[in-house]
Amino acid sequence: MFNSFGNILKLTTFGESHGVAIGGIIDGFPAGVKVNLEAIQNELDRRRPGQSKIVTQRKEPDQVEFLSGIFEGVTTGASIGFVIKNTNQKSKDYNHNTNVYRPSHADYTYDKKYGTRDHRGGGRTSARETANWVVAGALAKQLISHISINAFTSSVGTIYTETPYSELDFSKTETNDVRCPDEKVAEKMIERIKEIRKEGNTIGGTITCVAQNIPVGLGEPIFHKLHAELGKAMLSINAVKGFEFGSGFAGAEMKGSEHNDIFNADGSTKTNLSGGVQGGISNGMDVYFRVAFKPVATIMQNQPTINSEGDVTEIQGKGRHDPCVVPRAVPIVEALTALVLADFYLLNKTRTI
Image (tube, rainbow, N blue to C red; front, top):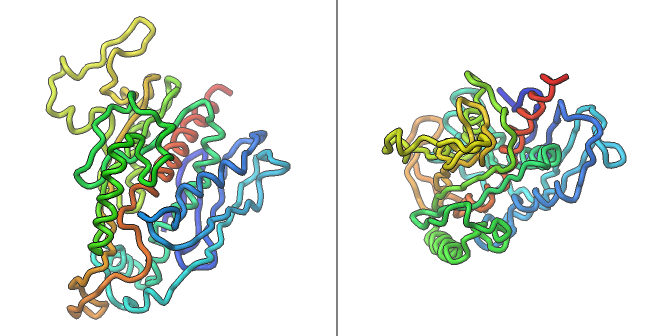
């Protein structure tokens, strides 16, 4: 099983949703970086459950404890070990599906691949794992503090913000429960999620992420392209079904004369349909992309399914689940973006030594 992410800056994680704890080890983080522990906890608080009425009501403090690699608030260059204890598991909520496969979950595929599975909340396949990524991403943000990374909810179901990201005020993202800086659209999104929750159903949406002040030269021209690594990171997030970079699928409908980004004298471009990357390498313009999330698979309605013996049966979702995962996924998208960019930053740095 692959439990590591990254190249020079590498995160290896452990733990299950209903185990004692989750955590990780970060290798390759440079020495001498002053760490703001409060900022790291703040990122975890943005992801944690129970923070509003439109997310799961599991009450986890998600308090991170660093075990190594940081001394007197400064990184030492050694492996950074951390742990987040699970304190609010309700494993009995999953007793009904000990040998029953939940539709559109990893239950069936995991069981068939490994011959065993943890039925309590999905075990290792649970999105609880993403708390580890947020810790590592929060550290990466501090390593590349010159780069600004902002993600936000850009749609819920068929409700979209049509305002270009360049006209949005990112300081408003955290002012509402759905994390959309377009305040009028945010209200509609919140009401829609509440409606869906009352139905015992779930709904999907998209997150847009914008990285600014990126230097020219991050990324490789062949198999380690910047946008390819970002895509890999985003598609590793639970429930993600799509990744659209720069002009994305809309670019397929355009002519070259419409899509080409014409240069200014200083090397910047008049438009940015390339999404800040050309030939797999950052060109100094804003890097932006959109990530599509499916509806959460656990719904509070009866559904036909099968069990481990191949018998047809019925299952109803129980426990505490998000009616829409998108608002809590915003800091996860930012965290993985930071990890990818920090990894490329360190790769470039080793080439100048």
